[in-house]
Image 1 (tube, one colour):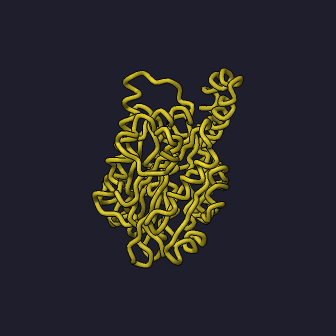
Image 2 (cartoon, rainbow, N blue to C red):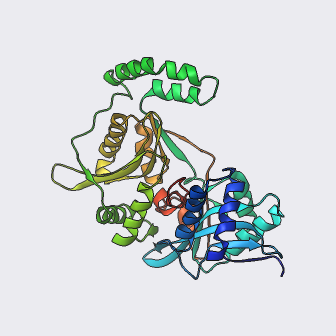
Image 3 (tube, rainbow, N blue to C red):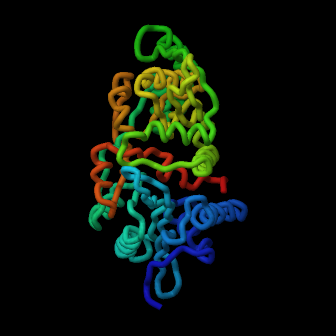
Length: 367
């Protein structure tokens, strides 16, 4: 038997779970945790809501049957100018360092991109993965690779950043009461940290509302996701079970006439940075929706918010004291469908964290 790349199967689960622990340096696992790990790979890449037998996850196997590489694949329904497309999202791309890693990595990426999908996406890629992707014909969506950051409690945010440096952790904890006083004072003064929610009514965002909101937000864009209530529900369920990210706040906002002004989903990480999964708004209500998001997050103890850039919101985010930066994660694309790559590069596409790897990540202790 020679080295090959083939579809991921049930029998491969133990080897792939062990490979993941080695590559990402998770260490040895107790029996219960090891089973949870295997359940994650089985449930996400063999039995998950985004699996398709024509576009399976892939493993690289040597002549002895040993798995030296893996790439998970999830299929998402998209449309381009109303025409249905299949987008394949790669996740958990990994190669064993003890194997012929460079050869294995190239072989896996080529096999993934050679699948029958119309569009391929990797949206949390490292610098090395980006170089590999581009070497085999893919490209980098630089605009979508940017993140925005909005500081809400500057003193607490600065202390938490200092505390992450190890030796300053004790000093940061001791300064917490002073930071709370300083942030409370700044919240009462005119300026960017004085946040008050606008007169919008917040309601829980369910699957049907999320589907309707995304369809409204993506209207007019060349490349857009195609959600029904089932797929929107699967996304909400996956995001809500994301352990360690903070409680999910999925909200729809309505104006005084009961119309949808906008919506947001973010993880409220108390005394930490909250990750925004998505925020969208009616064009005439963008400022109010962002103000409501920022005020809601601060009320729940978040020190700063961070999200992936939506090109259509760049001006509004900048006007509301957000800064833009690259966080080390690249959005990579490859397409056979004519015009798809061009739509992504000019920002004429709806590609949020909901469509990417955010919903597919391994969540320790959550199967």
